[in-house]
Length: 463
Ligand code: PLP
Image (cartoon, rainbow, N blue to C red):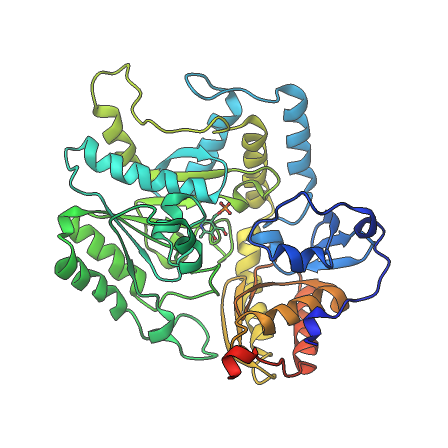
């Protein structure tokens, strides 16, 4: 019996009485989960509390999103006040003050030149919105041949049709047929740039960006390409760092051929790397940034595309002046509660200096991460800012079993929430984490790894 199937004993009042049959859970092995539900009932600062009253240290900021810590009083109060003042107002041919305030605050935080903001409800919508802006931008300028979109292998850009098309995770695409045509994917840097346990950015691998240019010239007419979308750090598929100089090269190639560069900063935005955006950290300014998650500290769903001013302005040139310039939007674009949460969250980041705090904590976090080197099954450790990927040796035929086992034991036995993707542990704590909590997080993982036992591989693969 694999250890991850062992049921842990405990007093799970809520779990015992809750009907879990109706909620079809996202990106979840529903049957496995429902055989032993993990329930989070409350949250504050760095901690969750489970339904049976256990405190769980949050090593993942929820889902890479609660950057200021849970239930921040200022953000909570702003949402409560907005809910009591005005629950909803449309933003189609209408507006309310908070959405304009939110856009202004976000534009001020963004890299110079990116100062027009389109709001949506999450990261997936921000990606699809950015891709549509890119396609429509070329058309509005009379360059409508530019219809191709380029992403990367192992890229994750959410679950909209645009996002799964430019995304590079086969499992997210292949079940749904031929989504968006004309999409190509660059190789991800890990295979070339892997230098196990090295710290900082990989020294080699920037040549992968040259492949982008070669592919443009060999496979596509560059004049048919609308946009390249990349995550500055590929988060969801295991914290894959860009090689030194790689993003700069992508920028230069995009400039050379008139291709828009989109940074998907849904994870890297709002302090994860110790700066407002990864664009600031790497000193590479894209044409558009997609963001979500930390935009409202995840207290209310919200996403946004931050756009270079002249891209926005190109839409405003088209005649006649009383026509809708961009045929796109959501009922909840700029929802008052989300807008209030956004304004309060961006203030919290600034007032509490959380991005600087993350930058200051990063070296300590890095030391702690690399203290896992040499423990059983640890194959690679990658980190930057307050994000870290710990790659484990997988069990043949069971590509997620090892990390899932560690995840389960961390949660049930150690009171620590980690995240796994395949056989990679991903950590991205709230930016308010202190040194003792960093120690607790990595000590828990180390203890679990030290007791790791062989997990039997499946018969089919063994045969
Ligand atoms: N883009 C990136 C880089 C992400 O990491 C994610 C989610 O993790 C998304 C897009 C999708 O965001 P959402 O789940 O809010 O739709």
